[in-house]
Length: 221
Image (cartoon, rainbow, N blue to C red; front, side, top):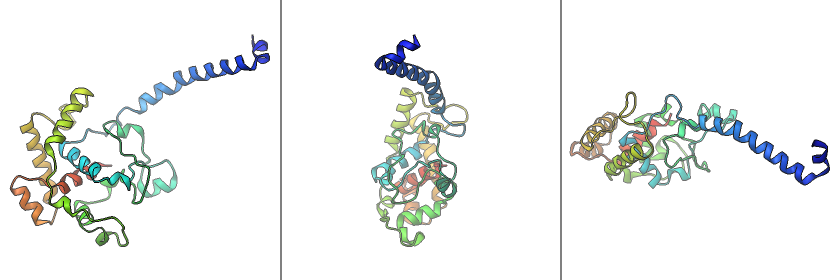
């Protein structure tokens, strides 16, 4: 048989293709599926974090910042452990990005504080001299869309079986319960902020976009 294949290049190529394709299915796909499972420490986003993520997307932060650390020493020295697929199991859509006008943000929650984010979003140059990032002062005046974030979390829980409301994972519950969770999470962030307008708005029952965005950025670890 092999001598016949050697004399017929076309059929030899077909045989090699089938062999490689079969090997790929047997070896690559199971490993790929295993690696796509959530990593051990990964949890779904809370409602407030989802609201902040929506702000991040709406303001096109992913146009200038990636969230994907490549497995090169120059990257890991600067940003930390390289990214693995299981870290993005709950990201819809993923925000890997393809351009870095600014630094990668995949691990920013490990090394930036609430105070830093507040000053950076209000006046980037005040904390990063020479920065070309624009100020995002409107985030201090606009309210985060908590209702849409809750609806999104509820949808992915039902459609994609995202593990909300189980031990060790974020609690979703009813809309009233979610509101209480959001308020408690936002209060912890606002207590570390200086902006009085944001504090006054929270006292009136409003949560500004900057608070939700900080909650999201703090979750990136």
